[in-house]
Length: 138
Image (cartoon, rainbow, N blue to C red):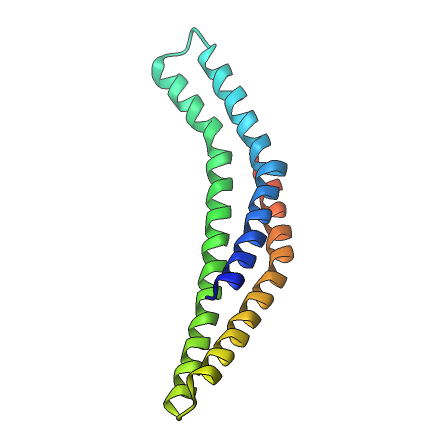
């Protein structure tokens, strides 16, 4: 992907991730640490019980992180498939005898379209992730 397109996409995804971290993940981390601290204050529990308690405290955050990671991987896979299609179109054009400037222009337009299409998906992905994160039992 051309650097400008890549930088634009990276910026948009980083903004989404920062928003999710600030509005959801960070609060979950706070609850996890508070819960874990309470587990450690149970002086009558065995070491095993305390570890199980802490594990239960970590479960919601682990699920949240898994959801975000999975969604980002799917997004990346879709973007990769789109850019691979652009590569195929460029190769076909080149193989048909087109000159390099025409192939580069096609590639740039095609990749730009992929980036635009995928940036337009970010609000719905964000909304879906926020709903999923909100539905994780604490």
